[in-house]
Length: 261
Image (cartoon, rainbow, N blue to C red; front, side):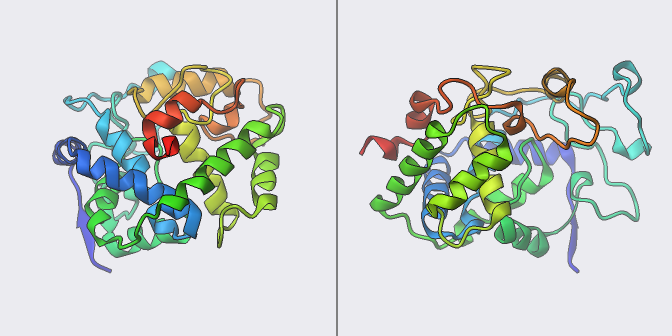
């Protein structure tokens, strides 16, 4: 296992530099669309990493105050930055990606297995974006029709249906070839985080065009999920429910200009 150590301040600066590239933005957009249309899951995650990095402010690490927000801290190294949420240092002897320890090849393989990725600033985003040149999937103009059809399915499903039921509806259409349950859920999560799939609790929510601090996210999640049973395991923002309409087509066209074709 070839483990690398990542450092927060350097990672933030590298992410901000990468996100300044319009060529990278265009490529990750094409990859996301092509991923949905072809089932190449490795191509699905870079768009999330890009937009997370795009909005990441230049800032110094600020210790998150667990006691002030009634949260349990297990280890001192578990303290994230109150602004970006990235952990300050890598704890010795533990191999968790959140803490800056990575096997790059294993992380990339995990992207490929299910399209799983962080919705918030993370060390893994740097690995994801740095690996984009190695993704050879070619975008075809007809791929965007699969994205368009997917968004229409999401729009057609009653907003009262749960995320589980929404995923089942998407699965039944067979729009996403070679997809599994995990890939469909992560696709929906990415679209919800970007704001293309709307959020009933925060109507103008969009991780594509706004930065939400670690503390802001905690507050939004607490408000959205406070009435849920303890056994529930909701994920923000998808589990907060879809707004009306369920798809923000204006935002979708901003992020995916291919939809105008």
